[in-house]
Image (cartoon, rainbow, N blue to C red; front, side, top):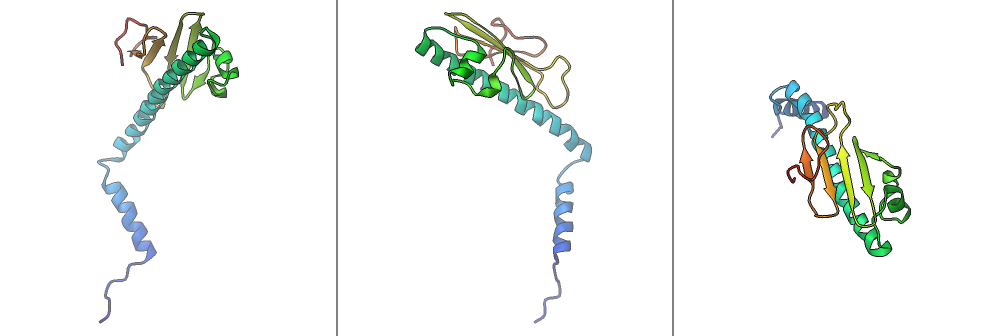
Length: 147
């Protein structure tokens, strides 16, 4: 019995390409979905960075008796080099922190001119609670809703 159909690598490639494009409603929908997904990933990264900063500050307070700035947290090994400086930028978010012996406050803000590949919401966290506050139009404060 002879096989009447022969599938070549070219046929498989053509079939794969067709399946990829047939699954999308249109190319423009896919083009719009990508920047949105990147922006959401940047926001998720900023939220995780705030949690890491809070953990680092807790360690600093426990070991040194005071909250501190980004450079001191990096030098102590509580945060990695990405957080060096007074206002580090990670994945499109600029972080600003004030710290004293008994409290800290940190904001994560997107650039003032947000592009399609950056998150758009602003975040805030401080030493009084383990909550992240969010504002969609301006730097967040403690009075903004919790995430």
